[in-house]
Image (cartoon, rainbow, N blue to C red; front, side, top):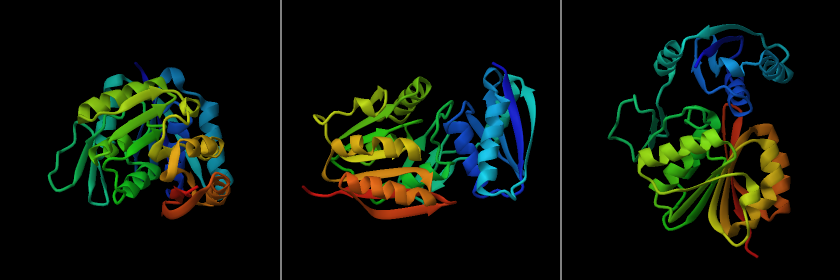
Length: 283
């Protein structure tokens, strides 16, 4: 398969580099990224390259800061060159000294409580993006032993893997994308964890199956749309973790959560991205 490399130069890196990765990778067909001194290299199967989509993502950045300069060049790479470039630039991630998220070609380490091996492929969730990092960090101090957990929009499955490693009694993971489904399945097997994996969206959630903990690292609009569905399958006193949005989105999410009896008890920010821990009030 031929890949296209888009070399993007940004006059300001933070938070715009992460915002661009999120737009290209979560909303679009880009599957891998390499940070550079000047900005970012993004990789997409050549058949899926769409210049108008790229320009829209850049336009969204400039809407946040009209002083931002952003330029890009496009070139097609042989598959071999793409893989070598990606492996050179793809770094393992240490999350708050307790969780080491690495690809198969990264070094194993003994000085962490949890090590997760992820083959990213086409899926979102390698801990490089601030939202995944935040969700992993929130799970650090969350007691999961014996609890039932749901991971919505599982992507690579990294959050579900950590939950299973931390002793959750039952872990269910759902993603709407077939490629993410296959990638997550491989990663569950790779890490030796037992996770029930489904392909679909919040329409799969029915009140007859209840969870103690729900994770949803998706995006603002889907979180707002599906908040009621999450609440309907969360036990009273249960915990809901949300990410995939910016700090300025918190008020909208808080208002929607309150409608469903969910209260924010913790907020963490990183590079203008945000993650929330909410608790469902007792009836």
